[in-house]
Image 1 (cartoon, rainbow, N blue to C red):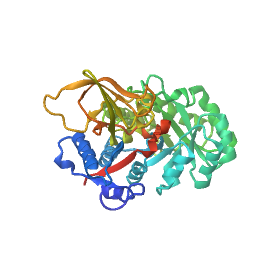
Image 2: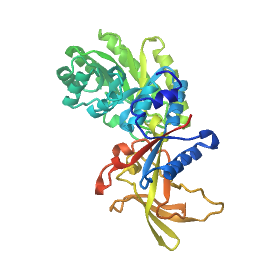
Image 3: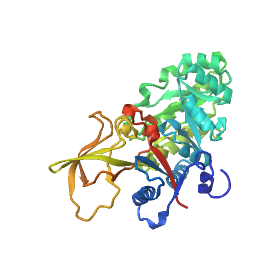
Image 4: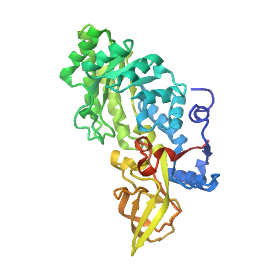
Length: 413
């Protein structure tokens, strides 16, 4: 991290410094949600030309708060941000300036991070099944740490990137009650660990550690203990095979910001690390948080572009939807709670409302039978906590291009 305050380092970071920045005064606002509303009102009121379509606001102060909270809770775990969660250059640049590493899963993600001046040594190629051209590119640029969970991947690494060091990806324990169980696709089972270590040993590829992922957005944090216990068993099995001592433990992601479960998960992780790895102080521990940093840092403002009144029922159309950044309703179990940008008046009547997206698909619908005060065409609806797996998974369906949704970067000193 450079000189000055953390915020000064962030504002000068590649990916951030070339953005149109919006400054605001947080101290004059009573609550965090008020701060977000104030940011969006400022953007709508002062943009030249006037902002007339959906946009996201990224609160850099939130990112600073989150990394500070991470370091307090998990002081011995370096975060490697999962780029797939939200690849916006401003959040990548901010996290790089704050000392984070990066979990990349493709050539494009590696390129995006390297463009910001991140060193290849701060990247883990955390995709257990990599296309050969992508692996060859990693070799060219010096990204020399990757995950694997099959013998076929070992053979591929030997052909395409023989200098690459590997992390053996283990299947996370069952019962995490996660939004998404990644173990259905990735991770070695317990009886596959020794054969996979032997495969790398025969190929002359150095296995330097173990990784796991308990699932995206877990609610049963005790699964971290079981995963760390399994990781230590793999470390010991490598020693028994005569392999060099491993030096990296990657505890993956699954963390959610602003929830009691983060503190609980951190406590479980710290206790398990002390219990199972306390005698291996030289082991570097890293994690792969994505949702933790991105989800609450982004807010969506969508403009009302259509309205229909049927008795007491109100139907609205907005200019973002299920095929845009609000795909997270389907893809990430996001629970939309839109609220008007305008301040509600005391005792203001609400109406049973439906909010549609802009495409011609009748399923492009955000909420049904939802209570909203009366709004008009040209007004704005705000969707909070919109940073995780939203813009990253949008499309161009019906000609509405997610990539055209502008992202404003806001900060307060």
